[in-house]
Structure formats: C-alpha cells, structure tokens
Length: 188
View 1: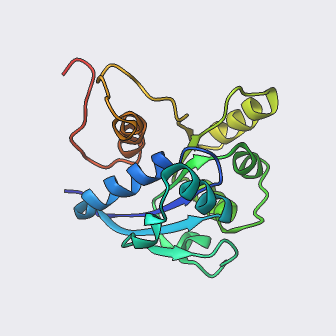
View 2: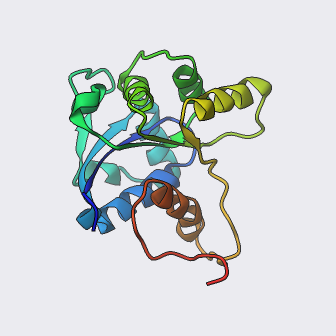
View 3: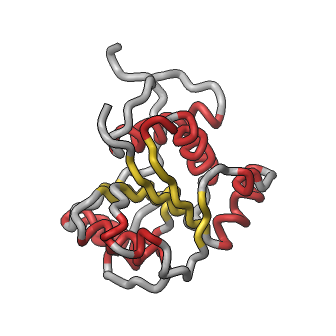
C-alpha cells in the first residue's frame, strides 16, 4: 500500500450537500489510506446542509475543522504536504475566485497552494446551466492543473436512493484522488 494521504475538503455553499455527506462517509471508510482530513465549511454550506439533509451531522465528523479565515491552518502552506484538495460541492463563485487567483479565504488560499505545488485539486462543480464565464474559469483551472469533476451522476449502476446516486459522483472523486475502493465500474 502506498503512503497515506493528507486531504483537505472544502464544502462551499452550493446546493448538493448530499455529495459532501457521501464523501465524508467514504473518507471514514477509507481511513487506512488517509492520514489526515482537514475540513472547511462556509456558513452557507452549513445552512444548505441543514436545509437539504435536515440535520447537522457534519458536527459529528471525526475530522478537524478549520475556520474560513484561519490562514494558520497547515494547508495554507505547501510545506504541510497535503496531497489533495477536494471542493465538494463547489460553487461557481468559489471556482471563479480560484481561477482568478483571489485568495480571500482559507478555501481559495488552500486551492492556490495545491495548484502552485502541482498537487491534486478536484472541484465538484454544482451549477446549471453554465455561462461562458463559468466555462472559461473551468478552462483556466484545468490549464493550471486542476480537475473539474461536475456533480453529474451516472445511472448505469441503477441507483435507487439519493445517496446511491450521489455515490456515482463521489466514487469518481475518490478514484481521482488516488484512493482505492470497491465501487461499480462499467463492464465489470
């Protein structure tokens, strides 16, 4: 087995809290591959979670939470060696600030660090339809080395619950992060 990863997960205020919930569940299941998980949640993310999922279960996660303006967090510097950052879900506002190099909070600063250190930045974009500004920002991030993984579920595994449907996206995110898992794969 390869070295355990240090991962930072940011939850923006975009709709799609189910994706963050399933991602957190999966990261807990994969604890043998993960050394540390740092969590960032905006106030809007907490509001959306409560609105969409009807609870505040994120408070019970076994991961360390950081405040949005805590620039002393380890992943605000490349020397802390966080290998992967996942923003799930990622609002177009957050994506735009990252694309333009605006580090006005810990999420955008950490994303900037991940890109400058040539590590994995995975943005689970959640919006539709897209305008040209969104598309150009996605292009900019892709050219800088980031990965845009839209929250577009697949249906070939015949998901029967919202959680199973969200898992079709999260499973892709986990694979992009380089973590091993058992999940549905086409043709197998």
